[in-house]
Length: 340
Image 1 (cartoon, helix red, strand yellow):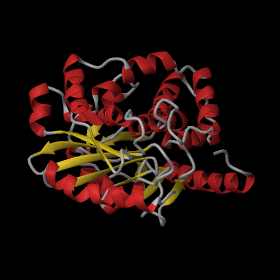
Image 2: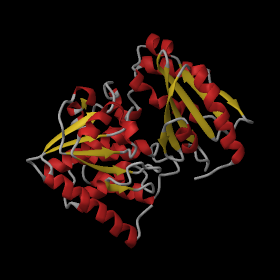
Image 3: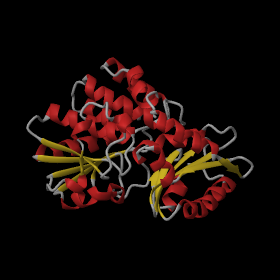
Image 4: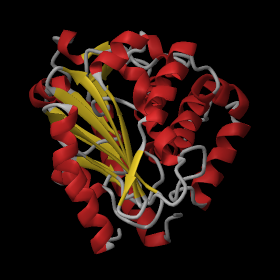
């Protein structure tokens, strides 16, 4: 949703504070949420490129909240090799910028770096912020954090180059589900158009992100597809992948996020859940809504977060434990009809 004049003034005020913090800092750490997606990774990289273009003397480090390698489908992004696991970073930055998250607990290993940083800022689009006292811009109406980063780059007067544009287009296309989710509004298309003009290639990005699955992944996908179960008159659909499934397939845990879209295809299902077991006693859940039901309510109840149409959560326990806990919450959401 495009901003009106009052909202634009408010956003620019936040951008001014972020720019001031960057200007005062010598070392800057950028980090997105745990289990990063295309928006998280693309937004961090684009912001890093922009800061270095505007302030060449700054030392900018891109952190990952987890120890896992970034998903293979995003390694084509310019600068992807510069990511460092937060657990291996011993620096004390002058400034820590949270990107695509506004709740410190979702920083996982990077929360310690956040804590010891001299100053903090945030660029995000998730509702339910716990960083209200931190300078920055949190705009839930934006379809992706990449949109807010693109507007910050424009605010700084930096000319978009092909590297920034590629990272930002990937951010927007993934968080809008290839412009198929409910958040794919006019602003998302408008910003995407500017990114294409600046050098982003939609076909190349689609090739890497959506059309380069390994056979091992496709075999795992078929197993997940065969397990899909629906209930509540077909309005809820779910499936899962166990740790044994993932190990046997040779697919990395970080490659599994797209499996939620397999379940999302079920006709008549309003609410979707996909669970992946990442260790003997840890599960990660992906939630999607195909209607106006606010799935983030369930994610937050389970210690996660996200948007009304796309959210996620961590869970301590087994797949069966996660199902026993999450399914009643999903049924209650469907029965209540609670919307964003």
